[in-house]
Each structure stands twice: as structure tokens, then as C-alpha cells.
Amino acid sequence: MDIKNLGVIVTGAGSGMGAATARCLAGAGAKVALWDMNLTAVESVAAEIGGVAVQCDVTSEDSVKAALARSPGARALINCAGILIVKRIVGKEGPADLAHFMKVITVNLVGTYNTMRLVAGEMAKLDPVNDDGSRGVIINTASIAGFEGQIGQVAYSASKGGVLGMTLPAARDLGKLGIRVMAVAPGGVQTPMIEGVSQELQDSIEAAIPHPSRFGKPEEFAKLVLHIIDNDYLNGTSIRMDGATRLAAK
Image: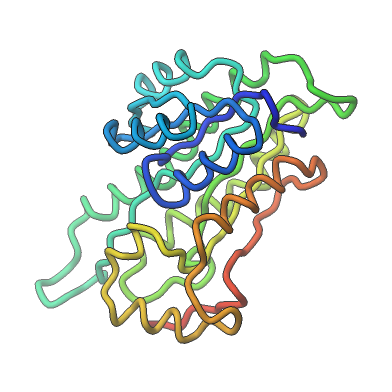
């Protein structure tokens, strides 16, 4: 699907992979709606690329519906909104609080499903853009932690494993509507989220990357998103972007 002159939505677009993706898609000629909880951050990126900044809580049905009203005709949804909180099931102070687990699952998994279902509902009303009957594509951000979660990542790994698990059935659900669903599972990418991880953990992740032996760049994620949009035969699967990394326990 040629994204030029078509509408796209990027969640978590105020920083990191979301901001890089918004810039990349705008550079390809897309009309970008940038959604983020942090309105100041997303307004800055939107002003830079000529996009529309929208404050949105992806976990709220009302908030997503209001954001959709300001983002008409979207042909692609790229879900980058997410959080990472590291906590062991049982630590020095006893069992982890349930609120921590619920928060991560709610933002990363429920938020992804919430935007996917509501945006897909609007996509389904649009006319096809090509002879294949394509109406749009949804690209969700998972993580290699969804395959090999590290110590302290039970909540995060569960949330990203859920995103991976949704990919094929979601593609099957939406295929008859001409909507593709894909997931990208990045390894360590140099974003504000990874900067919140301890330096010890950052060093251990980077040292284990076969090639190139560095963290990924947000722009590399954005390039992959653009390719997925362009390649209509990519559907129902997840792509690892990790330099051949396989996470160790810690």
C-alpha cells in the first residue's frame, strides 16, 4: 500500500520509536496524526513534520474515540505507546504489588487492543485502495521480551507476549475487511524507555548482541514499519528486529 497522501495514526508519538515513525511516514508523504499522553512532546514533533497532535490515553475508550474524530481516514495504525516497569514477583520487600502488573498489562496489551479495535472499525468503512481490496494495516509493537523475558520482566513480558499472541487471530478476524495486522518485536532500542533501565542491564543486553553489537535505532524501527505498510503480502506475523539477540536471564 502506497502511503503517500494517506492518513496514518502513530501512538506514543511524542518520543522514541513513535516519534521516529511519525517522522519517517511524514517523509514518505503520509498525513500523520500523532497520539500521546504527553501533549507538549507530541505537539513538538507534530509541528516539525506538519502532523496533527492529539492527546490520547490508549486505555480509554472515550479518549480513543475522541482522538479518532480528529484523525479521519486513517489507513495505517502504528501502536508504539507502552511502558516498562521492572519488578520481581517476590523481592526484598515481599510479593510485588498487583497494581504494578495491572498497569503494565493495561497500557501495553489492553491499550493496544483498544486502539486496534476502534481504529479497525473506522478503517472498515473506507473504500479499498487497490485491487487486493486493501483498506489498511495495523502494526503493533511487541518486544523480544515477549519470547525471552528477563528477571523482573514478568509483567512486561506477559504484556508483549499478549501482543504477539493477538497478531495472527487479529489478522484472521480483519482479513475479510481488507485490514492486515502485523507485529514488530524490537530488541534493545535506544529510546527514553531503555534509558530508564539500569546501566547494568543495558550493558548486559548490548554485550550479547551478535551483530551489530549495539542497541537498535528508532529510525531502523521506522524503516521496518514503512516497509510493512508498503508490502501488502506481510500479514499475521511478527518480525524480530534485534541483531540476532536472545535475551539471557539477566
